Image 1 (cartoon, each protein chain N blue to C red):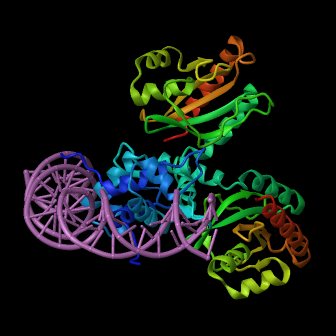
Image 2 (image 1 turned 180 degrees about the horizontal axis):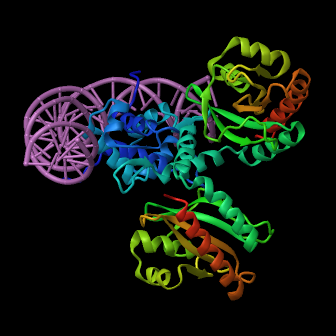
Image 3 (image 1 turned 180 degrees about the vertical axis):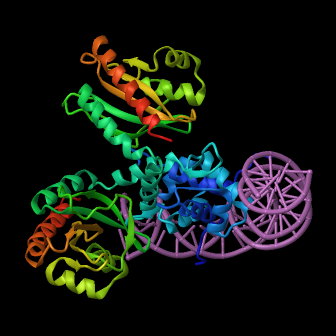
Length: 225
Length: 225
DNA sequence: TCATTAGTTCTACTCTGCGCAATTCATTTC
DNA sequence: GAAATGAATTGCGCAGAGTAGAACTAATGA
């Protein structure tokens, strides 16, 4: 089978990818530079994206992402049947542990924070929903790596105690513990994690949190199908 | 100038549009039927969308929207610099009026609920963020129509008292009042609205809410450069 | 005023993307 | 366990969509 793709579509999508937290609006030339496409080409592709509401141009002709993305994004999130139950489950975890609870899903070879309930504590691990992090580090990263990349070290860890932990991996002051959400058929959905400052989440607190995370992840998985 | 567009890109985007609240997952054939494209064509376009995380296929080969949409959607929402202030402003409106407060933006020729804070009251106007409604009706609809479609009746109304109201238009039991958010340069962003059951939001309560909505919308507009 | 940079429009050539048929794969039915 | 039904993938040749690149125009500002 010849590996199939539609070039112009991928070019168009790469235009969207050019936007980021740091670059919320871009000029035509910036997009061209970022994507390596010709300006004329970007212009035409962008016209179509704009037509469908994926891009919009503000008064000074700069490009921004468009509302269609938010609409479909919201739809995506709801298409997770677990959506309804994830948020309350995370809130319960926050209550139980006092730390921040998150739910991550794989996005390409990275991980995406789909839901997040922050700790009430002013000193906390703060991160926004929609943020994308690597799969190479962090407790949730390991869990995803086990399922998506087949990381065997992580797999072994999950086999052993149902969760992965990280202490100061991604960020030297953060500790976390994460467990996979899997339904009855073995289908993998994502990872639940609890994270907080390392000096508060010491070995003992981490163990307590671990139990909570594992049981939350399990019951989420069972609530599916 | 020849009206410019890239056909295959628009076809790809129309695949994404085929998904909806009711149709959160689709088979190849369903997509083909929905969009009017050939199955082979959909298959190739979808391959590229999938590659970039805009679609994914679950184990039984059905298509679903992908995580990239949520990521970019979240980015879009944050690219509104007012994002930070909208949510608290809406919450304050809920406290002041006891009813549900929302923020709508134009999305093509419709309106999109970008932020929503629900009334604490069990009997309330409930709607999800990401929902798309017509611009033809509802208080917020009128406000958007005034700016985007140039609806002159609505314009006159805004001229006169800075807001639009609706009583039982879109839904026979709902009343609402909405006002536009405009920055110092006259740039239009969207509409703030308060809505609730008509028997609670009587003429008097609506007038009170009106004042709150107008002033909230104004201060949001001013918080922008 | 001229220089610079950003964006748009035009055109000719190439190779992508398309329609459609044929094939494979998966289910269901008898 | 064949046969039949339906869904998805693959192959192929042609048309014309999409691209590169240049030329042109508009905006900025020294």
